[in-house]
Length: 308
Image (cartoon, rainbow, N blue to C red; front, top):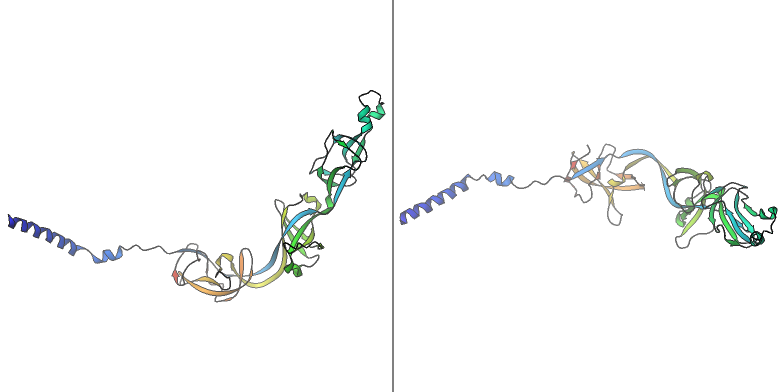
C-alpha cells in the first residue's frame, strides 16, 4: 500500500517537471503588452506675406437723435409708428385731439369743421423710431415728449481703443468692421471722443457706418485695424507652438527620421489667431512640426503620424 502511494507521488512530480520543461521562455518575454505609439498631426512651416491686424471692440451707436413733443393739450387720437420703424421726412407720427374738442364732441354742439380739428405731429427728416411714449387715448400736455428717434445718417461704430495702443491709430486710416449677420464693412477711423473711460482705460473713436445697414443701437462689433505687414515671413499653425507657463520660452516638436519627435527652441514674432511667425530656430520649409498631440511629449519620443 505504501509502495503504491509512493508511485503516485512520483508520477505527479514527473508530470509537473515535464510541464515546466516544456514552457517556452521566449513566449513569456513576448507576452508583455506593447503600448501603441502616440498619434500626432504634422504640418510644414510656410513662407508667406501677411498683413497683421489689431482687433478692437466696438458698439453700434447713433450719434444724433430727434425728439417729437406735443404742441397742445389733448388726447392721442392716432399713433402711426412703432419702435424700429423707418419714417420718411414729412410722414405723420401721431395725432393729438385738442382737449376742447374731446370735451364737446359728445354734446352735439360741434360743427363738422371742429370735429375734424386735429394737431398732427409730422417728422421733419428721415429717422428711425426709437421710442413711442404714448398710445391712443392717453392725455398729453404741451411739451410732453411723444416719441424719440435716431437720425438715420448718424449711424457709427464707437470703437474702444486701449490707451496703450492709441499711438497706433491714424485718423482716416482704413479698417474692417465685422457686423454679426451682415458681413464685413470697410470704413475708416474718424475723430476720437474726449470721453476716455477711466475704468477700462480705453479711448473711443468714431467709425462711420452706412445708413443702409438699418442696424440697432448697442450691437457688439469687431474692428480689425492693419498695424503691420510681413514679407517672406516663416509661419506655422498656432497649435504647433509650445511654451512654459510664464511664456518666456517657446519651442516646437519637430519630426526626425519619420517618427521621432525632438524639441526645437524657437523665437517668435507676430502671433495671430491661427498662425505664429517663427523668427529663429532650427526649422525650414522642408521640416515637419507637430500641430496636434505635442503637449507633454518628452524629447525623442517615437510617434505615429496620422496625416502623412
